[in-house]
Length: 219
Image (cartoon, rainbow, N blue to C red; front, side, top):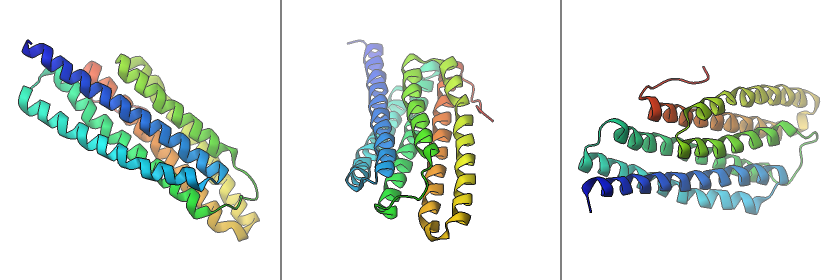
């Protein structure tokens, strides 16, 4: 088999493994937010245990990427493809870590309900989950325009975090008996906001893949 064909197959394999990792991460976000909203400890534990698979996939992608760089000495678009996998897998792994943090928060807050619900938590979770789903599609299609549009959605995530912060401070003043639980919700909003930031990072690597330029999106 020609060397170039072998290398193309190796690149495609790397590409597929990143997509598989991304799907696991997206599932982790969905389950983590659902576990918090429903106070489902079993689902939260599932997110925590499943994170090992995400971490292992990130390590395998990193190792394989370095192997291909060392053995094939790629240049141009080929090198950019491998660098994109390296960087995007690292960002996805961090998103998985934040999903775990949300799941751990579910366990910390117990089965009690906040006196007043904060629907923006669920809304933030839905937005970042869709962002992860869409950024994987953009990566698959190498769609720079879609990547830029997805990154712009992070503004809405930031806006919701500010709404949640304001509500939580108000609830703390109104009901000091629930200070600890409400403070956990502030942390969850922060985790979701960071997920939005990491999705934006992946968008930046898609732009790099297509243009060769490292550009900071959504400043």
